Length: 72
Image (cartoon, rainbow, N blue to C red):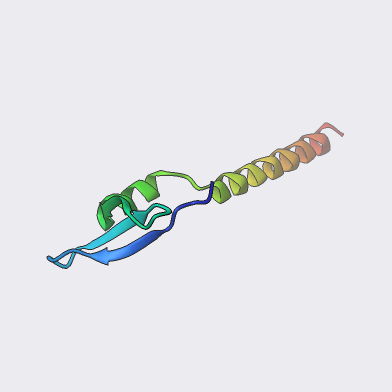
């Protein structure tokens, strides 16, 4: 399933809106920019999760090497 892209639109009052359309071009969801942006900031992306996992394993390797040097 491909990720649906948001289309930027503006309301009559000039507020920024995000609109998501289906395959037929009909609106599926319309959100205000503030609501959509706050939800995006609360969620963690897949790239952020992968980066966090890499740094976590790198830290484990460094601590293991330090413990090995202390033991000698």
